[in-house]
Image (cartoon, rainbow, N blue to C red; front, top):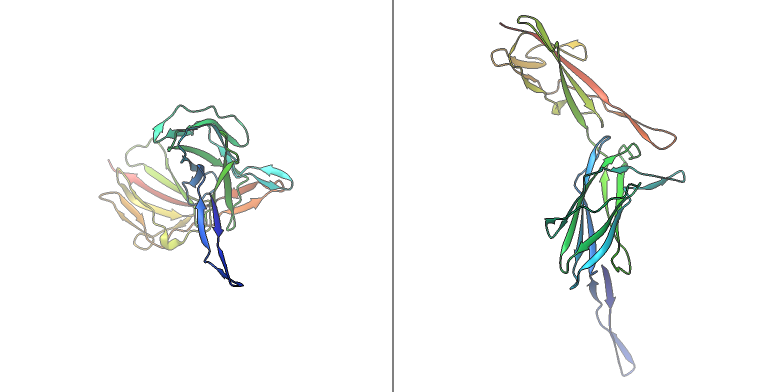
Length: 283
């Protein structure tokens, strides 16, 4: 789309009067809009995007190609890609109706050829891309990527961009393990919870871990990062129901450490904490 402005002048008996300036907008017959369906990213994430192509004209437009640069940027004279198209994730809809998928060439950028948009209609492309180790991390990190529409008799290509910033807060993941996996009655069973942080340090006041052990454990023993915990001070537990929960302010997970290599790639050392809960199973 483009904006235009103009004004008029009136000459009378040697004087000149200037009118007010008016502004108008000239809409493109074919336009493209790109939307990122995520507010932030962390290492290992998969981002989803939606690209909408509008045809405001009275005739169909065919043989269009959409190219997504997958966030490509120059680093030390080399083009690097913070995103990698997830094969098989593409969905193609015209006026809300799913269409046969066009062939997607395998390349650093994503190219989707053979698109057709009916008169007065729209096409929507949905696809996913995995965050690579070339995606900037930290407070200033962001992925900017651009989709460009060409072909179909367009005199000029159409482009639309979307930006997704790197995560600013803690990015937590939780895993649970049990040992031993096979246990006899009255034997000791241990649950280990591993908390992994791929972002800045988490606020202890916001962290609460809850579980319901079935069957309930008896004679509970709890430790956090190797330090013994006390019921009522660090956690609560009901041996009748198996309901377990840490108390606010007791858990903590350190920040991840980001390191950028000489080739520009980023590595992440997650912040880790471990909670261990042991007890016996009654007969």
